[in-house]
Length: 266
Image (cartoon, rainbow, N blue to C red; front, side):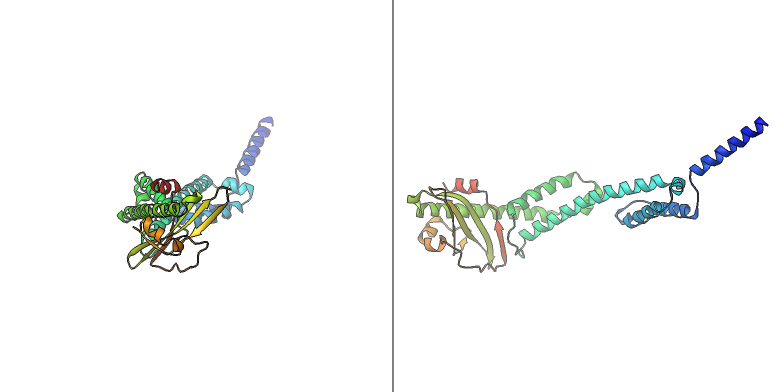
């Protein structure tokens, strides 16, 4: 009798353990099929993974335990997240490349663009591109055109810096007796009829520490000398900007390195 009772208890425990492992219902089988259908994970797998996860979450706790391939669902979700992070960085690189190409192209019309910042971004992308795998290199739009655009922007910044130095030289000549300190120089670059022009504004500080900004109401060509600006000081050093006519083939703010400008202006 005891032996029969022991066997009965063992069977009962086995049934309990099996029950604890979860019920293989139609819902469980459906979720397993959804997980299996995910297959090789790509960026296009997001909807399938999301649907499988939602179906799994809707199961009871016992049913969840019965899903044999749940581990594959978790792995697929992790793999998708890694791909999204990876390709998200690629998309950021491509967005930066587009901005660089636009800034260097003849159709560039946006103001507020940091040319120097774009150059740094472009050079960083070229370095990062070398370390990308074949998939990444096929996705990121690095071509000879990017290198050419970076060089064009460098030339633009260099010409603007040299031109700004002439502007500061002229300012220091016109206001030599005041001993003002130049604290900022702003350059708007324009291209009209294939000729590059610069429009400047300059902020200076007086002996009392008061800052004032002067605006140029005349355009400098890229090679305008300080003597020409001095001879036309009233047009180049005005208390306010009287013209907002910035319409041109190419029109953008060039961020200048003030220290470099002042060094050239000595």
